[in-house]
Amino acid sequence: MALNTLGSNRDQLIDLAIAERERLINQEVLVGDPRRWRPRWFDGRFLAAADLQGEQNYFLIRQADLGRAGGTGVIDGLMVSEAVEQGTGIQRLRIEAGQGVTDTGELVVLFDPLGMSSAVLETDAAGTFIGSSYLYATARDWARFGMLYLRDGVWNGARLLPPGWVDYTRTPAPADEAKRYGAHFWLEIPAEYAGSNPWLPAPALHAAGHEGQFVTIVPSRDLVIVRLGRTRYPHAWDHAAFVRDVLASVHRATQ
Image (cartoon, rainbow, N blue to C red; front, side, top):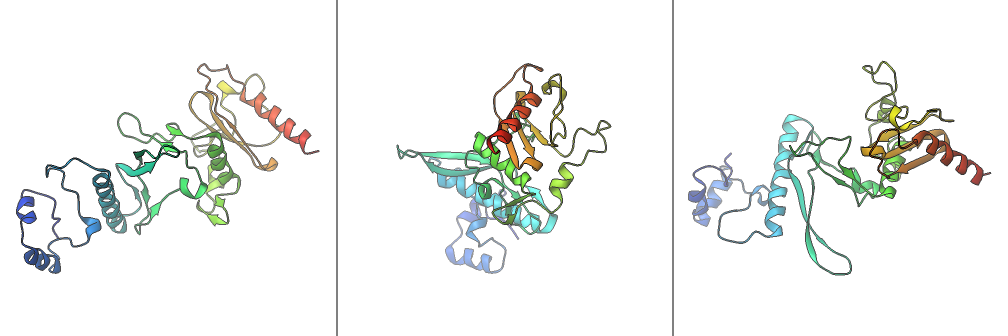
């Protein structure tokens, strides 16, 4: 099957008569599904939001096709959509990270079910998703992320993470001889932020971000602690003492 937007024959395909185009579509030589058409970038028009959305939709559908044949993956590129600012009514483009896709072609979206409307995931300069940083969100939205793990990957009765994933997350990684690190989560506070006394009164998981930003999950206390302050220098922030103080304050408040 040929795509009607690729190769040196593109201009000839564009100039086809409607009847001839329909004949080729019926013969499955040309793609007849509008979702699989790509925008024309060089037809003399100014680009509009609809062009960028059309391009993104094309890649979403194409990646879904590939996903059905080739397995789970992540779409390269960006999600482009229109957004209207509240209060001013100004229309702007919203550019976000591409979406994941399952092996049967369904999109995988984590932030929307959690209500993490502020979350923005960026790449490094080479276009690579780092994972350990470059995810920006408000403290409340980070708390929602922590609650997802506190609830074993279930949100509002719907399972978003595979069964057993949270247990896997808090299992020490085989390569870590000190048994302090699991799967993208610290099982103990990193030494540079643990102060002189790393002890905590209850087991916890820690998503440690850039310059001392933390999401700490304490399952036995049904508690998520978020710290977004930036600490540029190691040992300038004692997260262990902070967590102990928060746990003590919550304990007093609930007595």
